Length: 517
Ligand code: NAD
Image 1 (cartoon, rainbow, N blue to C red):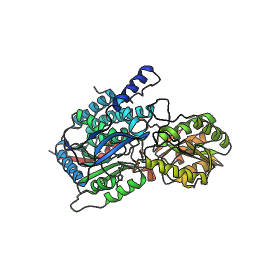
Image 2 (cartoon, rainbow, N blue to C red):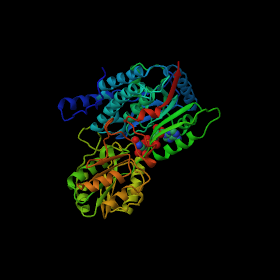
Image 3 (cartoon, helix red, strand yellow):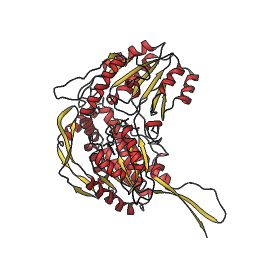
Image 4 (cartoon, rainbow, N blue to C red):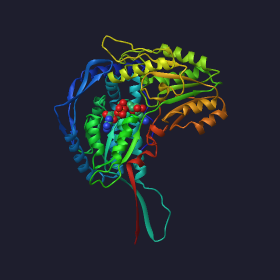
C-alpha cells in the first residue's frame, strides 16, 4: 500500500559525511560543465545551431552548459509532438501516471546532492537552499502522484433512483509550462508533474538562466520511462518561443511562474482566441510579491529580527516569498532595526561552493544592474542602514551586500515595487492597525508574517492581512508542500495553491456521466 505523504527531510550538512558527499557532488558536476545539450521533441534530440549559454553567476566566465535554442519552427514541432502524444497519454489510468512521478521522486532522491550541486553552480543557491529546492521537487512528485490517485476515484454524488451517476476528472490537452529561474528544479517540477499526472502533455520552456538544472529534470523523467512526446523540452527566448506557444491555437493551458509583467502579458495573449481555436485557454499564473513582516510593540526583538533577516536575505532575497518590507511598531522600531542591521552585518557572503557562505551572487548581470539601481533609489527614499553596494570579486561575480534601508515611506518606490534582491525596506507604523494597512497597500498579496503576543492583534491579522500565505510568529519563507499550500492574491497570481489539494483541479476538467439502464 502507498504510504501517506510526508515531506522529504533536509540534509544536515554539519554532519562531516554529508559535507564530504556534497563537496564531491559539486566536483562531479563541475567535471560535466560546458557540454552542449539538444532540444528534446517527441523523444528526439534536435540541434538548432543557436545556443543559450548558461554561466555561473559567481564566476560568469565559467560556462555551465550550452543549450540548443528553439525558435518558432521547433516550438511548432514540439506542439505537434505534444498534441500527438496526448491522444495516448490521456487514456493512461491516473494510478499508472502517478507511478511515473513516484519513480521520478526515487531517482531525484538517489541524486539529491548532485541535483543540488547543479543549482549551487548554475544559480548561486547555498547548500541548504539548493537541498531544500530538491526536497521540494521530490515532495511535488510524491504529493501530486497521491493526489491524482485520490482524484481518480471521482467524487461522491447524491444518489438518484434509476440512474448510475459519476463524475470523473479528465485532462485538458497540451499545456505550456513556463517556470522561473529562482526555484529551478522545484517549481519546474511542480508545474510539469501536475500537468502530466493529470493526463496532459507538456511543452516545457525552461528559464534561460537555468537550463542545465531543467535538463537534469528532463533526463530524470526520461529515465522514469515517460513515453516520448509527453514532455517536450524547448529552451528559447520568452519573447519568441514563449509568445508563439502561448498564442498557439492548440494550446489548452499555460502554467506560468514568474514576474507580474510577463504573467500579465501571457494572460492577455492567451485570452485572444486564434482562428480555429475551440476553447478558452486556462492560465495558471504565479507572480511576484512585495511581502511584509509586521512587528508589534510587545514582541521579543531577537525573534522578530531573526525572522526578518532570514526571510529578507535567504537566497539573496530572490524568492517570491522574501520579506522586502519590515513594518515595525514605533515603540520597538529602533530596537528591532538595530538587531536586523546587526544580524545582516554578520551574514557571510561569497561563492556558495563554500558551505560557510550564506549569501551567494544574484542571478545575472541584468538582475545585478537592476538591484543596484533600486539601491540608489532607496538611498534617496530612505536612510541606508547597512550594505548598499556591490561586493566585487576577482572572478566578476554578481555579489551585492545585503542592504537595509530604514525610514522608508510605505508609498516609496522601494516599498512598492518588487526588487527581487537582497534589499529590505524598513517602515515605521504608529499602531498595529496602521502596520496592517501599510502591509496591504501594494498591488501584490503573496506572503506576509505578523509577530505579536497580543491575541486580539493576531486575530486581526488573520482577518485583515490580505495575502495567500500568512505566517504568525514565524518567518514568511519556507513553504512546505502539503503543509503550506502556496500562492498569492491580487497581482501575485491567479489565486492557485501549489502543493495543496485544490491544485490538480486546475489541470483537469470534470465530466459528469449519467446512465439509465
Ligand atoms: P520572468 O517573468 O522574467 O520569467 C519567467 C519565465 O517566463 C521565464 O522562463 C522566461 O523565459 C519566460 N518568459 C519571458 N517572457 C515571456 C513571454 N513573452 N512569453 C512567455 N514566457 C516568457 O521571471 P523570473 O525572473 O524568471 O522569476 C522571478 C519572478 O518570478 C519574480 O517576480 C518572482 O516573484 C516570481 N516568482 C513567483 C513565484 C510564486 O509562486 N508566486 C515563485 C517564484 C518566482
